[in-house]
Image (cartoon, rainbow, N blue to C red; front, top):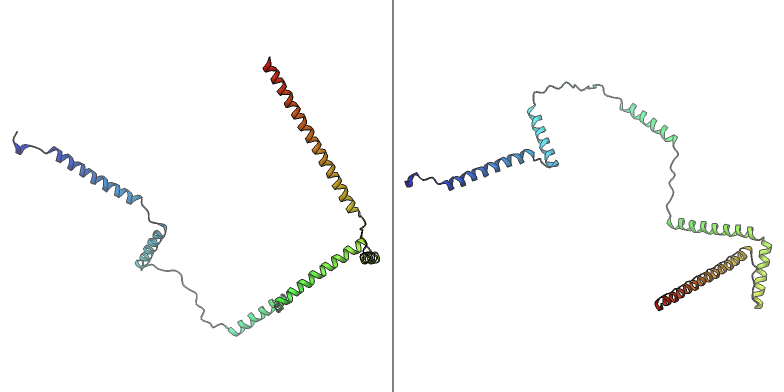
Length: 206
């Protein structure tokens, strides 16, 4: 076969593949451009620019709206008087705001004084409920006398104190009962363990 008749098949195959590759790239690019979208902010800016351009181009639009023009000059003095009258009538309905001088130290002193009064009133109420003034004074005098003479001051037991004593006594008894029951349980458990050990030893011997 003459040399001038030969066909370079390999070069043709390579060129064909390269051409197909470029065509695929173009198709892919067109598809991506078709489905792609701008970000929200840029999309809005582009729409606004288009609208402005469209508004400039639409110069031949006919507007039907005609504004109503009042050619008479209003009586401003009369309007001001009416407004002032309405304002005064509305002010008369509401109570006036009385400004009060702000004083930090005075308010703190008032708080302390109020708190002191509350404590004193609370003490007086408790005192009136528990004892009369005469009995309270007698108890103070007897306490001071015993203290001056160096005697040991003993306080009379109240119902509350007796109740507290009873509760403590009951708690101690319950605690002792619990300890005894625990001790018995422990002894029974140890006894069972010993019995099992003896049974196991007997089985091992047999």
